[in-house]
Amino acid sequence: MTTTIAATADEAVADVEDGSTVLVGGFGLAGMPFDLIDALIRQGAGELTVVSNNAGNGDVGLAALLAAGRVRKVVCSFPRQSDSYVFDELYRSGRVGLEVVPQGNLAERIRAAGAGIGAFYCPVGVDTSLTQGKETREIDGRSYVLEYPIKGDLALISAHRADTAGNLVHRKTARNFGPVMATAATTVVAQVTDIVPAGGIDPETVATPGIYVDRLVRAEARGLTVRGAR
Image 1 (cartoon, one colour):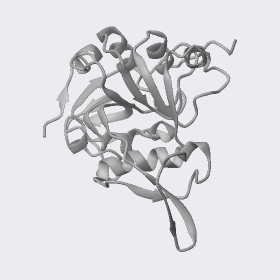
Image 2 (image 1 turned 60 degrees about the vertical axis):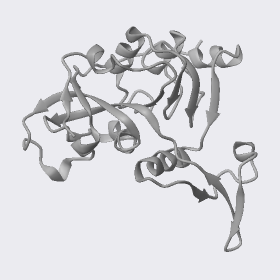
Image 3 (image 1 turned 180 degrees about the vertical axis):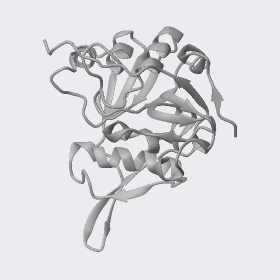
Image 4 (image 1 turned 135 degrees about the vertical axis):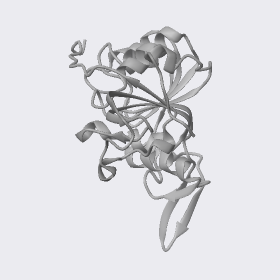
């Protein structure tokens, strides 16, 4: 597989189809692929299922995608926080669906998709509404619930630096879900602030190997502030 370097973020997401499942990296605003999300809004694909840690902050990133009416369902761990007013309004009015997944389960379900694991048993959420209707089994005297992988048609992630072979270096907490999402999607697009020649990155610092990355686009790092909760 060869990693393609796109000229623009719009080019990188030009072929996204309606109804796609999109894995979006980020932990709140940390590591959010803002340029790729903005390009996806311009591209126009709709009826999307978005998988991310949370359901958007303020008016930017995922919140902007939700506000544009492009999302059918959100799968996340933290749908509500003080600045999640866009999601709140859409959910309360029945305009977007929601599946809440405990954070560890979310990471493991994505990892399972990348590892080719068909399903796994986990004790988190047993006997709660989060696992209602799911298969349970007792193992060594403890109850577990069967969880299935979460895979994407597309993963949009952000990284600090890439080489032309697609190897990615992530910066601190901006790393979050990026590496595991890169293993679990059919097409992986990464925005980075710097692209260097192949061999220009210390292999020991690579968190996402280039074999998982289909497209790269260079994007300027930006500091963001969001509008406060209403």
